[in-house]
Image (cartoon, rainbow, N blue to C red; front, side, top):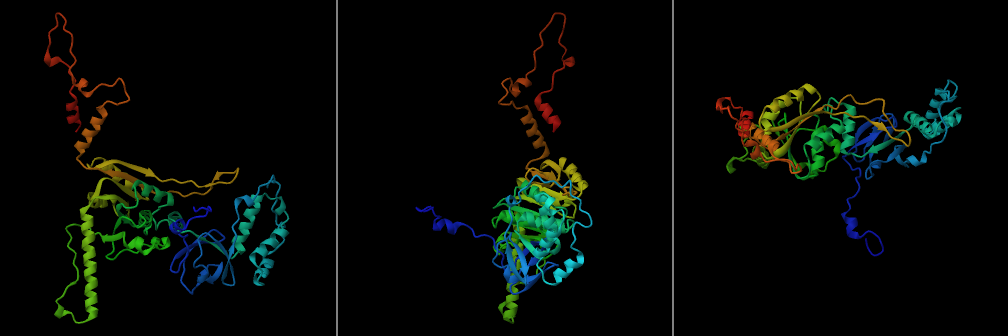
Length: 467
């Protein structure tokens, strides 16, 4: 702030500009009936949104997300938003309202005639409200619901949705949840949290869920770190979800690299087309350019393989149609110590069997399976209640920590921690006191027989027996 209390120039320059719609972006729009669809904005083009209508794409370019527009002769008019404070509730109730056949005298034929004559949707709704016999008896919230139902039928408006990870994941889950393998927004959040994804980290991802996991990791990395994906294709995979995130080119090119399952094996020797020829064998500039591209591809593949085989990645996330046990056997050696391994599956048996197998294997600590569950609530002043319909399942997540050392070493550490005295326990004694053999007082007429003595085994023996 300067002397006059105004923001300084340096502060204004450091503030990032708000996200605006640009040419080439994929924009999510919500229609009056609640349906969401994806459109691509291209300069000097015309966009059709179902029965809502069509408009010029240039009308949206440079606009911020979250605004509601009304289509008027292929041009857009911003509709001012209404706040919750504008909808003041009253003491009215709906118990005395009887919505019979003649409550709304405006017939379908009359409504169709009004639409064909060019009457605006807001005017049609206004006429319906004026002729509604019981509209004045409704509560304010009931009136709003009535208006929204009518707008869903007649309105030619839409709202742009901010391309956040939550909104994009929610859109794809509602569109085709099988395509994203039942990964809801809350499921994706838990996966990224358990994998401890943060800027600057290095992660391996196996994503057969249309790129929803890759998009989540890229969004959290923010252009800093490394993301290595393993896929089936020879070329970098085309993740459709990434298109809706509208990532900047540098946020992807500087972070994301990929390998297929063949090149991810250390014993595999990639067969590459020749990229170097003697100068006298090069016949044209076109051939020279093609050889240069081949060399760049070969060098990039070699560098990516060396990066994978060097290991020390911070985490591994798996959302694949293949058996996670085989995937884990191949990729877990490249995860660093204390790195997290997260496996998602729509089916419980898959992760349950994997959990059972990991419990007996060295190098994995505390494999845990959780079921993802979500309940949506409607929150209004004085009337909060859960929604009647909810999602069946968001799948199941297995989380395990990669550790160094053998199984016996881990057991020894756990037993040592168990026998160590606690600092907050004043009556605790040292481990050495438990190892001393208690002296039995001698009595007359009784002789010591070492073979019949019941001396407890020392702690070292217990440890060795347990291991």
